Length: 145
Image (cartoon, rainbow, N blue to C red; front, side, top):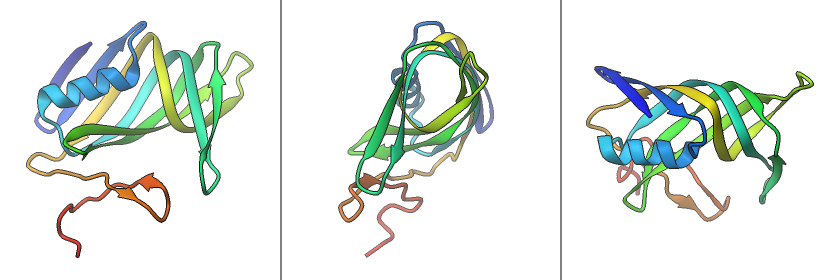
């Protein structure tokens, strides 16, 4: 992975074969990022799994052939003391049709370019909200009763 910073922004290049979530999580851990937005990402995935939340669970779709990443965005927060990466993606297959949703897994194919916007000095939380069965972004952890 290559990474350059310009203040609160980071431009990353993840490489062929790299696990996207492992790469972003390790980067966040190394740079001590606890609050960031993935503003965009482009590139290719060798394999990916996207999910659709049906109100009670994710319905997963595995993509076993390479897909172009035409849109990637999300957040990095903290959950249980560790970086928590939440991503959504729009992916184009060889037939030029788009598929997308909650990105559950992805392996980089060729490369993945990602722009991160960080919020220095802040921590976003991602507590489990029992009523939904999901971890939700909390921009001000500890400020709620």
